[in-house]
Amino acid sequence: MSISMYNMTQKQYSDLYTKLYNKANKIICTDKPCQTCLEPDKSGYCCFRCAHLSSTGCTVKALYCKVWLCTSARLAFPKTACKLDGIMRRANKYLLLKIRASKKETLSQVYRIMALTKK
Ligand code: SF4
Ligand code: SF4
Image 1 (cartoon, rainbow, N blue to C red):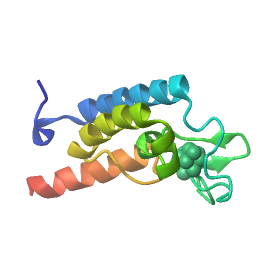
Image 2 (tube, rainbow, N blue to C red; image 1 turned 90 degrees about the horizontal axis):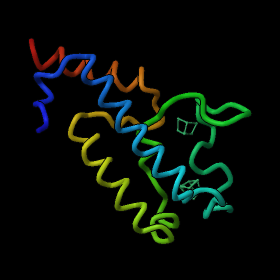
Image 3 (cartoon, rainbow, N blue to C red; image 1 turned 180 degrees about the vertical axis):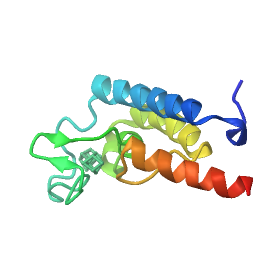
């Protein structure tokens, strides 16, 4: 049973983010839709010029990036896309999707919105 987002504590939000991120990460690691980038002409398409990109890859746990696939990857890996879409819908319901954002950045935004709705 899911809890109303308005009744959730910050700890519950934090745990939900981690849970969804880990689920998506497991799917990506197992199915490997991006092992060979299917958009080679758009070099660095996904992470291009992102502030969180380092020489060794992404430095944060970005849920939105983990559940997003380009059209080419979606077409080549439809089952993977379907599984990720399920996580994306759940994350979206709880406002946990923020483009190119870390967990801290995403949750800060959620907490600000929650504070505003309680005023
Ligand atoms: S989502 Fe598409 S563009 Fe991004 S890394 Fe995967 S295959 Fe490449
Ligand atoms: S936050 Fe997203 S776009 Fe930025 S480096 Fe990480 S995975 Fe790439």
